[in-house]
Image (tube, rainbow, N blue to C red; front, side):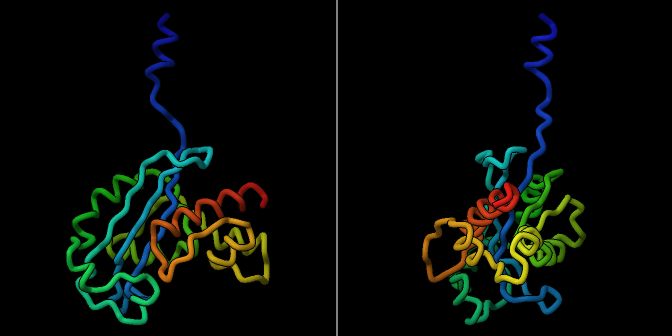
Length: 180
């Protein structure tokens, strides 16, 4: 009987991962560019969503250039109503703690996250862009191209958004990992 209780109350040791996606004000945090949106979707060891999602719009406390607004649609008027990254920092760190981070061109996202955090994340990292380049060498491997090539249905929108892009990226990751 004790063995049954031990199994029932054993700590869950499954390895969880998070698929992350960000939207930003420009290309380089060293130039003062900041995060404006972040999404992290938790998946289990079988790459199935657990239902846990971190999503936040972020006040960058700087102007979002018009050419960038045309990409993600997040303007200064909208973003001024949200807290800065500092408000979300501990919750975000708790959400990703000990989990593998999966992203498309993930070094770009990490550059901004590490800048906002003030230190480098030490999580295991998987880049779906690197995976795609191995599977589809010398081809266009941005997220939209991969979705089309891998027959992943996408909603057509005039804007990119971190939440939808993270969901698309998860499907790309699963197909690339499964050998397409």
